[in-house]
Image (tube, rainbow, N blue to C red):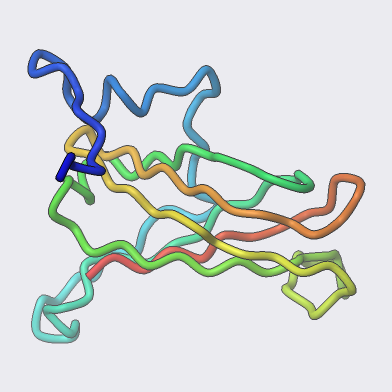
Length: 131
């Protein structure tokens, strides 16, 4: 029985195969750095978020260099955001939003693919948790 797996050339890395023309997004806030090691749950490596506007299918590259490698456990959620009381805040709008794939790479770039169920660009936030 033939294998269903895609065979990639041996001389290519996952980073080369996953190349994108777009530049990686930078975090909205710098990742949390705690001063006293005993005040942090050692299983939590980092948490931050990224904001962008898009619609239908999206693929973004998140810049988490120095925090993430290919063996990191990276969890991403998505929510629509808007300005309330002068600050960007998440809210439950009419659009649906989904995260489909989250792929961390050794160079610290995390590729996130998903879908926003709206016909024009809306503002969304990707909340990222690294364990």
